[in-house]
Length: 530
Image 1 (tube, rainbow, N blue to C red):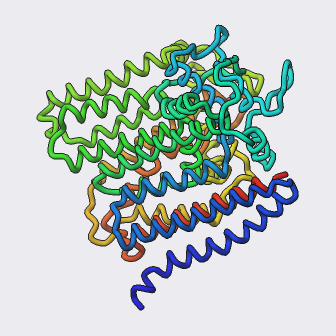
Image 2: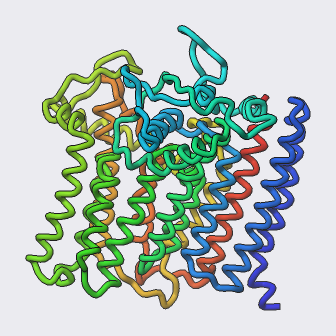
Image 3: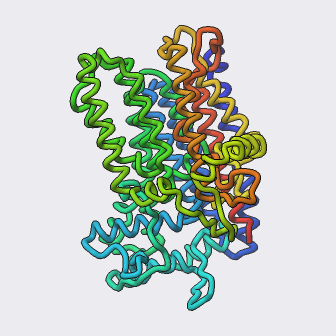
């Protein structure tokens, strides 16, 4: 009887998923029937089947086989991410078409071809041009990319274009797209580019190519999450919990470089905590790892340079003294600065000289660094007003309120987000007999780094995206906070609030079950949008 009560919660979650999964199958069938695309019901059926099988396997691994946390976490990220990859098809994530073009440019380099044409536009196979031009526009007509507005028509386009054969219609002819690569470190697009390159070498069509590039990005993120959990001396399930939030999975299963940033920040912060609390002494290879990571993720978005502050958790004695610490710090800093200058020298120069800023989307002048320095009261007011008016929106969007291209219809229900947030908070609370690692000043430093990251994000978007007429800072999104979120949650562990019930494995399982429900519901929504 006691054993049955122990697993009553996970069993109830699976039963509820089965009921709600059947409910949303009716929605999917209604939309598919109206559109004449009953094959969507087959896709939904397979997704529902895999969701139930995954939860059964996960339950067996967590509760009976006692899998290590990193194994269950990696499996969850990979399986759930794959489901999000299917439910929200290629190029439907925020700015994904630009990220796709950038990854394609890197793929050209890997295949020994020019990345862009003489005007700077990315070159791609003639067949792949469909992905950025599903409506066949020409001349001055507006081109619409696949998945920009995610509806049943998107699946119809995918099915029609891929029908009959998986083989590319034209492997060799290259054309210029209407897209230019994003100006950032090319390393952030390497996983996606490897997937695109494999698809081109295999000669598959553009639809398979689009999915394969996304899948490779998901594989990279899964590897980073596994590595972070593997080395972490504490808080493993917190990292896993953040990694399976709907927004995290949606980004990981897309072409977005946010997956690269999240994975790198998770691993860098975790490796620093490993060196600080678990490894007896820092070796040369550890410095090399930190230097390579800093050089890789630092230039992608400069505000995440605050992650370098995690290195201060490592005691000086583990470097063999101040001399060893100084040399190590110089190596890591030099790697970061060299990569930053190499990738972002133009942007840094513009900020340094206070170049005039014109916000194209608003059609007016924007803020600049000199303006902020001469008007600090305006800067403080903008920060305050933005936090007051947009803080709740950031929190919900960080969890997964609006997926796709920030489409409010493609939302995860509030009660699901609230339940997942509650599970994440509980994962951050210390269990009975769990050792405490972070001291008071270390928690304060970790929170300071997170606040600094938020401040940097707000300042960057104020300078780069906000017109002078605005009363709040435009362009800041909740997903930008995901790279630092697990470490903020870790600071909740203390000796005054202790969780005496609800194992980490159960909380993690509940989050996975909610993810399965969310992704099935999202697919049914897309099927109903005729």
